[in-house]
Length: 434
Ligand SMILES: *Cc1c(COP(=O)(O)O)cnc(C)c1O
Image (tube, rainbow, N blue to C red; front, side, top):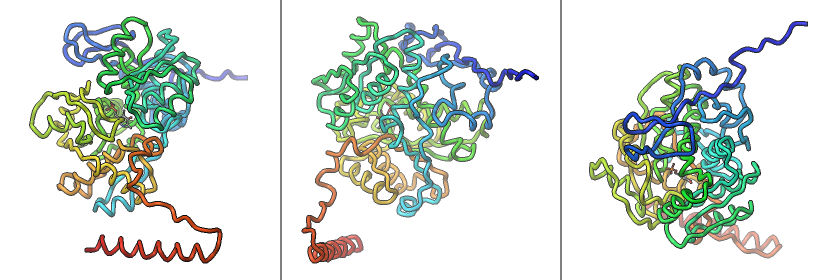
């Protein structure tokens, strides 16, 4: 009997090599650190791209797991068995009705409202961060969260058997709080906004030696967002889009989609081409959009006041890099008010059957605004990133959607209600057409 040949490409070898400063040339070991001691710039994971090129091909990726771990060679983990709860490979939907409504020909929706396990894009970053946390020997994990991150950290920590303590602002939506508590972590609801929560967590992190996914583990955590770039390129048939529109909180996800595209180009999985990057913020927390409009290259922190709580970061860590990326790719950064955000949520639901949360409403409303301003070419292949699920922010649309018809269990009661509904529809139709 012949022995199976152990092909080198079949064996996983870690490809991440060190942490490097985003400004300057300082290098650091692959530990739980996130800031350059010399420049105070964020640290980023560096890779051996020759090693990645040797390990991956379009075929090997396509044969991989149906999750973000099909891109493991591009992620900062060394475990043979990373924490895989089915995160990633969410649908890329070709939009018909929303596209027609907006006058676009090639619009796609990347639907992370149905990401696993907690219905937001945060499951991507947390799957990577907790895998790395386990490798680094942490037994307690934590985070400073605007809601979705707490859901994700608590759920995936439960699955991995890690102790978990999360910090949230005390005024979050009920669905986000309940959607964390169910996994039975310790939850600290802080009387303050996200930026205050984050500052407190920096102090706690220094004293307790916990793995904070978005603080001391941030270099690894943020790499998880690259998978939003990888998946779109693969799902478009190994091609890059012309234009992407995504929400901005800290600005990390936005810049990492770009890093993902660039890495696919670097190892020869897709052809290079210019991709425009446009960002979406809520007017009540739009420090990056304001800097963009005013032509500044720095971000002035603001105090958030918007229904889009999941993206309400007043002092965005990667704001400057997001700003730079939008400018150098000929994109835009726009903001919309709370009424427009609600309209955005309703528009996506009514045209595509996707119920997104306030962050998605923000992104759709900004997409619409950019189209109306002539800043999106109807022919461009445009991908809009929907990052969270509407069932978690139900209070945002309460009072802005219709009520059910309450009827008796009788045919005539039903028919009267149907008549009323048709009259209402006619009235609405008349209002729209004037
Ligand atoms: C956290 C979050 C974002 C933005 O993330 P950043 O990487 O901090 O910019 C976008 N959408 C939703 C739903 C989020 O929870």
